[in-house]
Every structure is written in structure tokens, then in C-alpha cells.
Length: 69
Image (cartoon, rainbow, N blue to C red; front, top):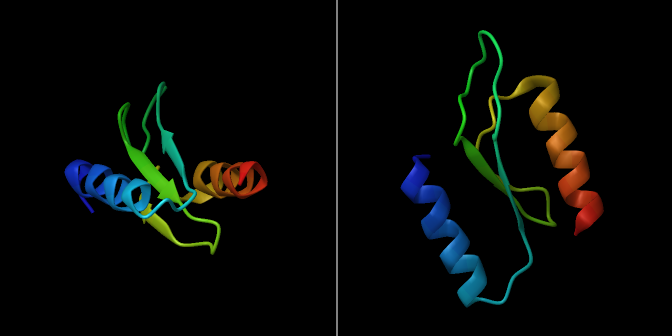
């Protein structure tokens, strides 16, 4: 999913009045799978659109997103 795909998905969800969390990488140090600006949408049903790079960071972001929803 590209950067624009994530934002298109957010527009679709907003238009449908569906809750979601948009998470964005704002800082990156060293060698990482994703760089600043990478983003992902988390829906209450557990669906994820995009990626923050996977692994522990994405798992932690998913937990926090679901808690927020």
C-alpha cells in the first residue's frame, strides 16, 4: 500500500463515519525498515492498512491504536 493509498483509505473511512487511527513515523534512528513519514491505519476490527515497518514497533502501535479506539 502506497502513501496515497493510506490517505485514500482514510478518506473512505471518514466518509463512512468509521473510527480509525492513523499512525505516522515521526522519527527514525539508525537502520530501520521504514523511514519518517511511513504510516498505517488501524481499524477497530484489527485490520491494518499500510505499515510502520512491522515488528515490535508496529505491534506496539497496533495495541495503542486499539486501546484508543
